[in-house]
Image 1 (cartoon, rainbow over the protein chains, first blue to last red):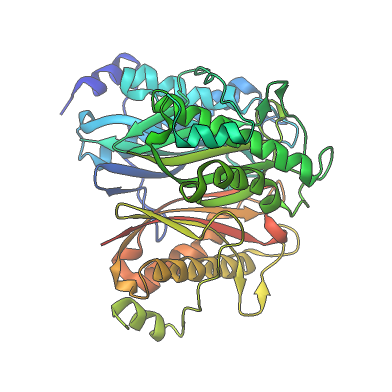
Image 2: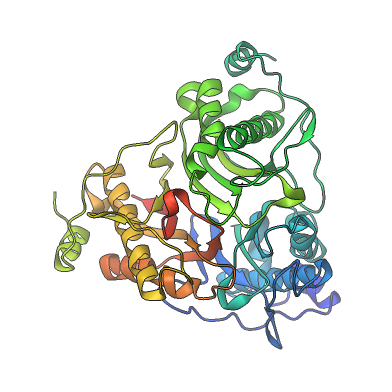
Length: 154
Length: 154
Length: 154
């Protein structure tokens, strides 16, 4: 099924991959009522994990690309939760973005904008969200960014 | 409109400022049902951003003042979401407080109490909340504290 | 009252202690509708706080044990919220695990699995959850792990 959101993604040149399976006794998402809680998605693309530390091995542009990759993974999980029909998504409610950075890095917002901008590019008004952007001392596997989200479904 | 909560704030000598506008493709709050998700508010007051690192350039008292400033910003956003009538707020549900600190700082609870205490001073029983208090490796613009919140509205 | 979940815990050799009281102007949990928000639980057991930093004074196994202790504290608070009848719990919705670690630690998932695995051991399918696992620059009192949770009640 290809709806409005999928058409928009196609225009952006993005095909959502198969959702990654759960890695342990947790799962990529849990729905309660019409709220969908998606687990923290670590920065990765078709080439594998996006590794590095902002303020050290990565610059803000690298970080924003990593955050955009997290955004694609988040929508991939939303699509799986919607059994393939992404148009069941009403809106993005909340994102929390964790940036793997040095102790003096100050551009967390510009990094996480890579995900925020993607959500609005892909979803229009439904992509506008509340969010927090902070640094983590480190992240799983050394990834650059991890972002979790809360989504409202129909 | 000046209701009970606004009267209490006036007694505390606090006038909530105009809510700050969104800075990017995210917004200061999103309401879904009667739940309001407010974006992470960085420590700032009329003099500007409150910058610094706990355990280094700031002490616990400084940090608690910064957290209180975050609390005022959170309520400012809640008031905006309520179209100016803060008495539409039922209660504070959850706060997550991020403290910009050195790796050996241990007084995150005392810092975030600056916000928690303010909520109860301003809102009475409606200000009592669940919360988490942790350190971030660093925060946007070098601010001392960032706090996000979930609020229940009528 | 001893229901199914309590029986399972007993089989695991776990008796949930009395829930710890609130420490300040925040409380261990807030319920809104059928959603229960439990405050961040710091790693502690009958011997006191579990202190240390992953990648420095603690290894992954130590960290997983600390995370398991957080899980027991979370269920203790859920039980208190259910007035002693843990079978009022429908499911664990979401966990966020903060690991006190050095800047180059990469095994946050293996640490937080200590809590995730406990939830499924204790609750079966109802224990399966969404989650995020990140490092904090430091944590209250120097504890090794802090975990917060969202739970659905009947």
